[in-house]
Image 1 (cartoon, rainbow, N blue to C red):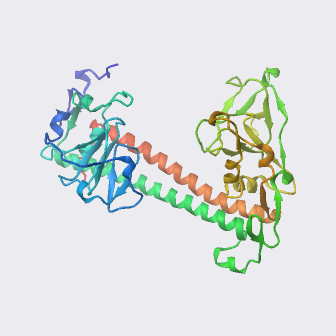
Image 2: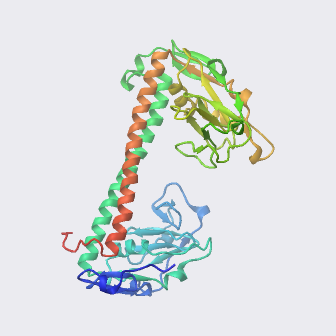
Image 3: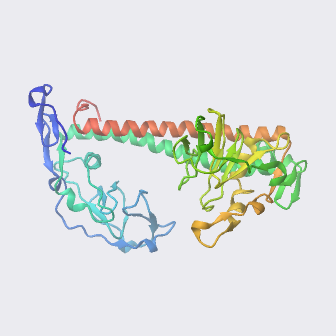
Length: 416
């Protein structure tokens, strides 16, 4: 459907109507092919099977990650003009590359910005605004030839690129903080489930015992998971209660931070497991992809879950829900559960519940369980705050990208 534009008589002062809609009067519009140099780009290409984990040169391909791998192949290093813009002919992914690299094979288009017209970084952002229909794994580059791009004066281009890059830098910095916090959480879990809730520099003062599951504090116990939880088997049929409201926990086909809750009336059929606050849901379907959730406060009268969950109810005065939740993600439970698979085909594979309940786990006193959970919850809250910041920056970037590229917001007077 074509975009609707305001009538030419309704345009603000200093704007004119163009192929791209209303734009500032001093901006031009050019075809995509004018924005890049028509030069044959000589570049060696590396097969994906030849990517290395480390190497002298990064490999840039059409995949989602900026750097797909590494190589030591000097003969394949791109020797031409920098920076360049990479376009994924199959994926429609854009990348701005201003460093030496080796090009990944198949579908990686190297485009040379026409620097007489464009600031390269501005052109990269302008290209991200292009609407390119998805043709599946077919090639898309031919569609670019039909596109048009805005062409502000170069000083304004540089100012726009500076603003967008500033937001992008903040988003990338937040991503690095999140990655660091996730690594910290993994390290903390290893420490806490080995030494207990003591400072790292005090670990050597903790008296340890050697057990079947490795070293743990001498005053902790080793128990079977089934000794401290009740495996919830009670079910009900929601259709038998037409006047009641339910929240239904379903298992998604992918790992998500929150278990999807489907309200009553959506795909709730046959028998479902009854769950209560504090229940830990451990997905037994497709166990190679971990799915673990903790049921929080009840907001409606009843909560139910898919029977593809192993629903574990912590036994009061033995194990806390918070401690069990973090333990479920640890090396004590998760990797062991993933080995307990039965079924003839991947779609039929399930965790064997009897074996699962026999997993040996460390059991500290309740006060230490609470302390361990509080430490990990503090890290989780920080991760959640940073993820919210990242989402806000992503939303800001998208808004600014649109507003700056259409001239709705002007930055031509900014100092770069």
